[in-house]
Length: 172
Image (tube, rainbow, N blue to C red; front, side, top):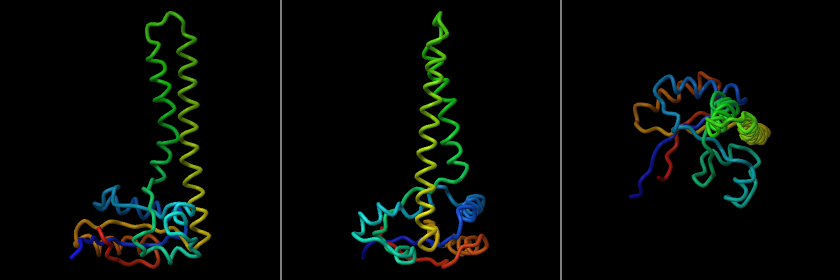
């Protein structure tokens, strides 16, 4: 007998309702690592060998590639936190230098690098959201580490606007 695990599945009609559902799940004992989303259209086509027309076709497919879920807060952190952190590192590299110009240049470079990284994450997320909304919604998978969490997950997903909410069993 092969090992399996259970997960809750829901489809959302907007990134805002998806974020609200995940926030609610997190505040009710679900770990951030339990959430995953459908990968990009390109990644799905590459892995499955075909394009999907509707997200319903892949929501229960164990071969469908997934991405880590990054909440709106996480995406904001990725956009804004690297810049000051990298700038501070650049500034610290030149601590004790008699000329402040290298520190300013390093700080500016850190800001540019952080902003570029944040922009890249945001564009990737926005593209994936657009692709999936055009095909029926945003699929959220919630790994259920124990049976007692099943009903709680389903209740929260429905209450937060999820549709096609159900639990399935997946091969480990």
